[in-house]
Length: 237
Image 1 (cartoon, helix red, strand yellow):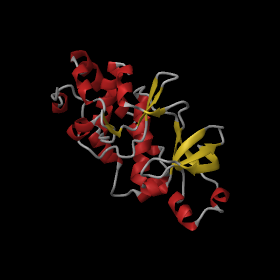
Image 2: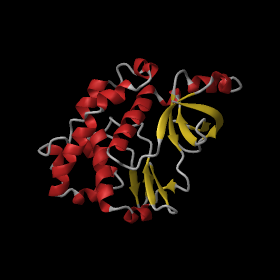
Image 3: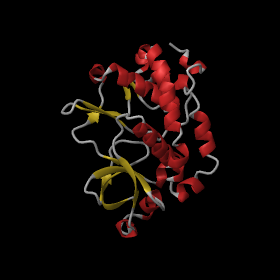
Image 4: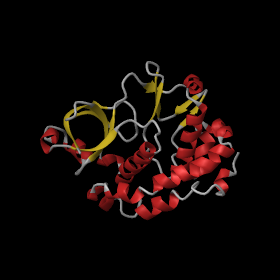
């Protein structure tokens, strides 16, 4: 677990009001605190871990401790927003900006199709982008020609059809060909086999304070979707 050594400033974007911080590994992170909601922190951890297992381009992330002395000079309201226990820390992606509609063709079609499936699988309906704008929760680096997917705090909330409706990669469902549908259920099922271990890594305070909002059983039930090539959710093309 990392330790926050410097609280730099509140991020300019994000309804969860993340803070830019520096941790003891020397890197900067966007930190989501207790005010984001324990359910949101759990969703970030589980979804990010699944993305990492599936080799999707999620930034490095970790749990981090916040020493009490760093919060002593903050206002009482802000201290309440930080809460108790570990925070979720997502590493800052250098040279990256929010992805633009004109960047989408630069991303390989197969990757776009996999990210669309991933978001439909986990119920993440917060990747919206059209030529009129949106809230894609993806970053693009012109320097590295690299995509990063971020902000999974709303995972496990939307149905596959709801996710697809406004997704930045909705049109790329055309790439779900027979080979894709044959291989991806096995990859998803293999990722799900880690779910108990991932849940076991969660801080006790997150689990205790999210009681009734999100459970291991509810996540496991959700992630049964798409793990069978005959699942009706595949029949959407």
